[in-house]
Image 1 (cartoon, helix red, strand yellow):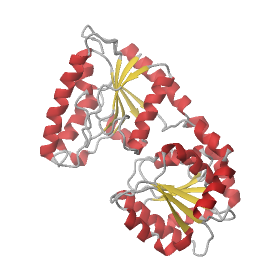
Image 2 (cartoon, helix red, strand yellow):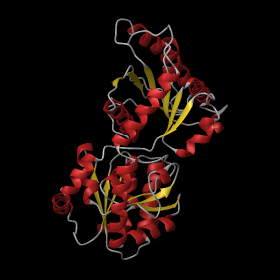
Image 3 (cartoon, one colour):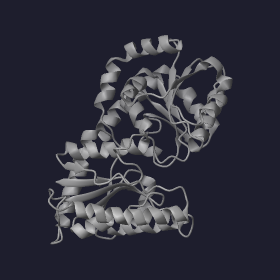
Image 4 (cartoon, helix red, strand yellow):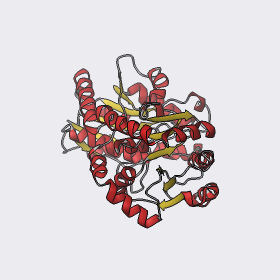
Length: 385
């Protein structure tokens, strides 16, 4: 099948790394692994921070780009499906519903959410547009269980809702585990780390939003274990770096700032760690939790959004109440026990292979797309892309 893949929040071809781009690229990879021909018809970003005038301009531009996509269709290979990733009030889809309807093809949405409190507010235009898209969707792919109730209430009865566990390609992490000791020796030499202490790892952009709030809570929590011997390796950079460093100042030499890392370096960094830690305040779910567990590293996380769907509390890590520094510290203390870490790390690898691997997701998506296409055969307006 030929699939048009569009991400209004951030295109998979965007040059700036982010969790959104990672998930978008993962979905494209899963679709291609299943044998589909995936094209990206537009890199248009509809994201807005709450300016109604700007949203109106975005809507006008989006509608013009939809016209352009239609004009480009003639003379190209047929498209069978439109697939939009990450639909919500801040990043509505102005292209997909219109193009799919004009082409007479099924329309799918992944990771949609409905925030009723945005009705009539600063994002009302995007809120309404996201509801229009959900009402047009033939298939909705849910990556976060907390989104399901609101989304189901806005879908057509005949449309299908598919729960898909967040996923990644396990192979680079398995390869990194095989080279763990070499990586640890390199990092120890670079940062002056002691190999006889547990290495804690956190990976996050340093932004002055909820990321900074999470960093500050993490710093507070790690002061609670008192004289516990560990090294924390912080991977990340950004405009809030000075505030992040200030938050961890009390931990002194127990904290090392690695700086930004190339994506190709990340599997090795995860594999070198003993424990992954991140409070995840107001996050839907974090790819970093999956990446750590793929490398056999247990995690301590905050109970936010869909985090319980990617971390099995008491099995592959510990989940603390969201924003609870004391509870987070308790989880770290538990995981400082090497026997507990080894048991949970082994369980993490097994769970990732069984439920969160790219191959598993590819098969699940392929089956759902095939079933949806069979239920929604292209009409006479089907054109070429």
